[in-house]
Length: 245
Ligand SMILES: Nc1ncnc2c1ncn2[C@@H]1O[C@H](COP(=O)(O)OP(=O)(O)OP(=O)(O)O)[C@@H](O)[C@H]1O
Image (cartoon, rainbow, N blue to C red; front, side, top):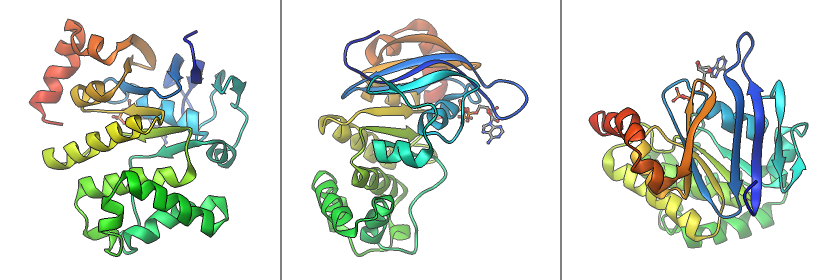
């Protein structure tokens, strides 16, 4: 095992009924690291995040956080322990202001004042939140909305942030805003487990990466190592350039 491991997925088997989607996946994330999962559609990348946040119970294997097995904990318990999932399909409330969205991010705390205090702190890292504070979230660009979502996750003071394809469906300018936001999280000392279709940009912001294929880890290494791996280049980087995704 690596030094300073904060989160580990150990031999996880999981699926949604018949057939296993994850077939013995093991992943480690050290304190302060940004780790990126890449791989083809359907490889099980998002499923790894669901198993970590507790949305899906594995059939076998364990999840460990700070060295303690958390596989039996509920989503809410994991959230309060500091595991925050920013899924692909649940964005901001478009008809609420940016600031209202930030405060909603702390709903589970049950302490409005604390939520406000943390939202102010998150806004220091993401000034957009202050600049556009009173605007409706739905009026922001796609990249700006993603940045507010990332800022909102900080209201729960996460120990690890699970980001599911944050750049999906965005134009190049918006994608830059998103990857810049991920770098800010890293500079702030946060730990990030990222799933990205856009393998080149995902690996470029990551300390380490894992290539998932058919529910198994096929390759792992530093972001730079995977970026220069000929097989990764042929299978994933060429394609991500060609589709511009
Ligand atoms: N809620 C669900 N119920 C049933 N099957 C699901 C569910 N969610 C995902 N799957 C299936 O599990 C497989 C893996 O999905 P997953 O979302 O983990 O893949 P992925 O590697 O993240 O790729 P993608 O880029 O397509 O999201 C896919 O075949 C998908 O159809």
